Length: 239
Image (cartoon, rainbow, N blue to C red; front, side):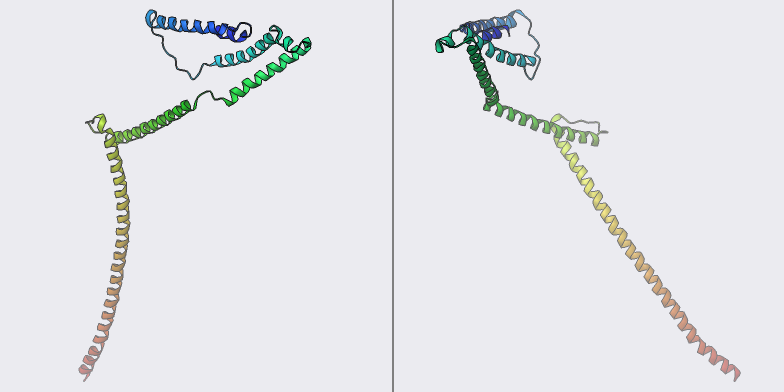
């Protein structure tokens, strides 16, 4: 942060500072790598989504660097005096402010229209997220199958290896589906048997009613048939 601020804030005063900073960073990369690999214990990595508050610090440093470089360029380089010999101090200040606003506008446009990552990196991230979603869905499906298998085989003493877990879970799901279909078929058969039983009992009741009516008619017919015989017997006795 210190090296970056010194280079960016005073780049107009000493342009070679960026070159010396590059050389210094190359040397520090090699020396720090040697120290981390050879002299110190390996450090523990902490995953993070970004550089945190340092991003805002570097962004503010960029805007401040535009202001300081425009001020150095306008006040101490003598470029404005050579370009406009009759310019006044107030005019120099106005020119510096206009130049600073123009540079800030360019910086903002670059931040808005130039993406932070390339299209290849965006595509790689998209593919990685798709793979992670697919892997998560597979893990969720596998866990659901394992849950079904554990519920169905809770009292089973023997456990199969990991290679057969998915197949057994699918088999358990098929058994559950078959039991569900058999239950629905049994309910349908019970309804049909109940309807047939109702029809059969209704037919029996109708037959019983017919039999009773037939017996009543037969009894009436027998009474009518016996009545003339009794009458004839009485007449013969009287004679």
